[in-house]
Image (cartoon, rainbow, N blue to C red; front, side):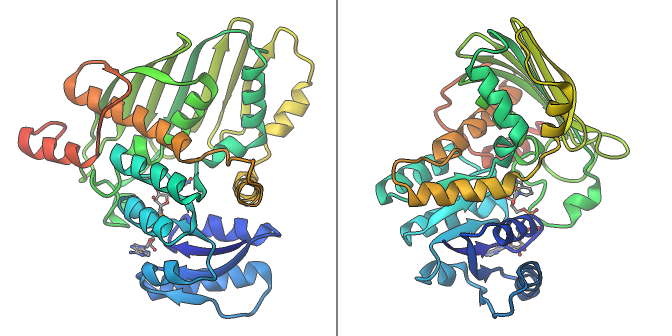
Length: 361
Ligand SMILES: NC(=O)c1ccc[n+]([C@@H]2O[C@H](COP(=O)([O-])OP(=O)(O)OC[C@H]3O[C@@H](n4cnc5c(N)ncnc54)[C@H](O)[C@@H]3O)[C@@H](O)[C@H]2O)c1
């Protein structure tokens, strides 16, 4: 499978090292508006693979999408560009690997989903944590009812993002180009929570902005109800002093509790259920396995090659966390719970509300 990478910034490193580790993947083209970033990506990939050919480099991503050699476009440019590039890629007949958040508006997410269906192309949204062996195990236990009925799921993100992080790239911290920190960093936790607990029906939320000069929030809190009746809680901040503390996830069931966390979310806090068979050592070792990007690429390739197989995080799946976070933002604006489905939402409207009402400033 031949890939082209659009956006050669920070997260591109992860895509490059993952592609280098997948036997069936070949990277043939790069695109970035900054030529040095393409050169750096090329050097990095060639060093990883030990190869020595020159890669095709396009300052205009449209030319990469027009290249017939590229079968899959990886979209790793800044979030505000995802929708435009994704739609162009689908029109050009490419499958896409789309970085999270898939878009900054529900309508654009819907456009991508319907375009992919019409063109019979695969869309994979990068909520890669679902591919971690420990997450796959939790999912299996939830589905097998090993924890019994789940009453509550809680996710926390306690990390540090200083002013320099936002100053390093102009798109960061803007509602129009980035979305808030819950949409950028916290979305992985929201995605996991609803993958385990099912569809969200109601969201109540609030957010707070600290003193860093930018538009978006530094603290987000949410109370969720799932269609099963289970409750959920989101607690996320990027003001944890002086450095990242942890990402954590806990599920409290009728006869089981699973709780994991730590800066890399690879520590078991509790793993206990009624009919438990596996040892603590086995689960602790499983939690250390973090090869998720490679498994993600293998899933994508298998799904493209086998017509009957659907990729794990297709567009409709990627949209779910988006809708929940948008509902939380909407609730923060109105002070009221929001019942899903949310008819429409785009993060740009939060920028307009800020400017016209002074909300959050
Ligand atoms: N899945 C994850 O865990 C994860 C982690 C970090 C970032 N991300 C996502 O990846 C995306 C990129 O984040 P980043 O931290 O790498 O940002 P970044 O700013 O470091 O990189 C973005 C790159 O896109 C390039 N770019 C801008 N406009 C372009 C265009 N028109 N054509 C081609 N390239 C263009 C920039 O020059 C830059 O090199 C964001 O959407 C972010 O949310 C995902």
